[in-house]
Length: 238
Image (cartoon, rainbow, N blue to C red):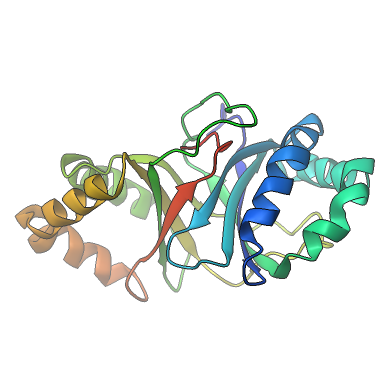
């Protein structure tokens, strides 16, 4: 979208040492949020993966690929990262699981809670689809025409949709996954009961079961992969 606040988005999944996730989240939320945004990027949200106790997931956005490079050089070459990188890196086994994406629509704008705020009970679900060719405008039209209404009707209105950004990585010091074609959408639920209600309603939807799902499955290389994410206390996406 031309008027997007951050057309370029990184979906970052970190595998951490056992018991270190809350250590990293505390450090991240105290030291890394505002300094990153001061360089021109947007910290969209940060999460605990509900299905992987040692995985930390977060999203950050950029105005374009050139300014992404500038912002990352500024932050990772700056004093805040240099002062805290050893503590951060000590929590991590792997930080290279990164998808570089382009937004079709921005996430809803929301104020970031201050330090000390309560952790929300909401759940954000990211649904990732893969196929053997790029997700083109024809797929996007199908999503808007068929998938989006079925999800909305069953309580899972998509907050934002993204697809693979194929531009060359402008900051090679931080690797990104390549050679993949991905389409991602995010939905938000008030809590586990709302998520379970959506799943039950979707499974019982004849429109989804008989029309939408077969057409969706026909174009994908496998079943969609879902991340169930619990927003941290300072996540703007919550």
